[in-house]
Amino acid sequence: MREEYDLADFKGGIRGKYAERYKAGTHVVALDPDIAKAFPDAKSVNDALRSILTVAKRIGKKKKRVSRK
Image (cartoon, rainbow, N blue to C red; front, side):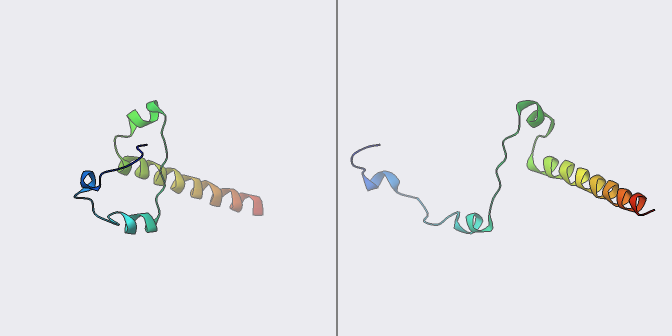
């Protein structure tokens, strides 16, 4: 880091630009390269994970029904 900074170097910045987004919360996950290659964007990752959750919930319900008998 510099000992001293010239504030003129920081013109154009907007204070709190991402404050609302930060308050809402974010989750950053690093994907392995082979996985990232299969999912080009956040939407495709989210769609795949939602599909897995749906299947997992169905399997969980079936297991509960079977164990009650």
